[in-house]
Structures are given as structure tokens and as C-alpha cells.
Amino acid sequence: MKHLKFLFPVLLCTLLLGLSSCKETNADRLRAMRGDWVSVKNRPAFTLFEENGHYRVTTRKMTYRGTIQTETYQVSEKDGNLFIETGLSVLLTYDKENDRILLSPGGEYKRSKQPIKK
Image 1: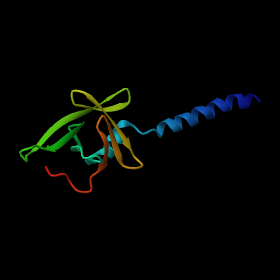
Image 2: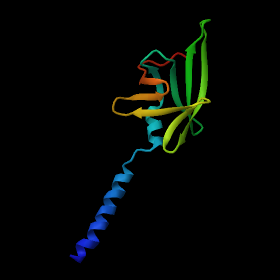
Image 3: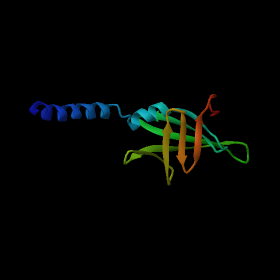
Image 4: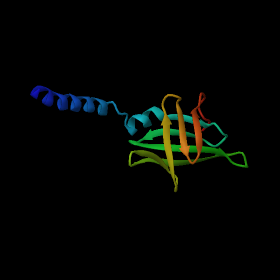
């Protein structure tokens, strides 16, 4: 009985340590999210990329004159959540199973099958 009282907490700690090491980090999510993304609801497309150890998002939209306007923003992490710093904080979440990104506000994005024209 004494052995069980000692063995149970040890096994529980081992299990919890094993589960915590399986947790996906934001760095892993960002690595998986790199690439070109297009909106499901006709919003501007964007590219998520890494530059000098920092992740950035570049948006592209067509102006009324027919030229492409680009803007680049930094991706930051606060309290375990990812944000695009646009002046407002845009929450960035990734659905690994469906390979979709949800921007709040901003809507749902799917990975582009073709590179975005730059």
C-alpha cells in the first residue's frame, strides 16, 4: 500500500510531463502557416513569411487605378495568442486539420494553390 501511495504521484507526474511536451507551440504553428493565403469571402489575400527571425504578413489589394498596393505587418504573441499588428490587433488562429486561418476581425482564409502575384 505504501508503494502505491508513492508510485501513483510519480506516474501521474510522468504522464503530465509527457502530455505537456506534445503541446504545439506558436512557433510551430507559425512555421506551418507560412505561405500564401486567399480569403473565402473576397477580402485581400496575404502572405505569411519569416524574415530575420520575425514573422510578418504582407497584404496585397488592387487599387482603383489597377495597381497593387502592399502593406507589411509584424506578427506578435500576447498571452499565448498570435496577433497581426495593424494598428489594431487582429487575432490570428490556425486550424491545422482544415489548413485554414481565421482572422478576427477579417474572416476565414484558405491556403492558395497558386502563388500570389507580387
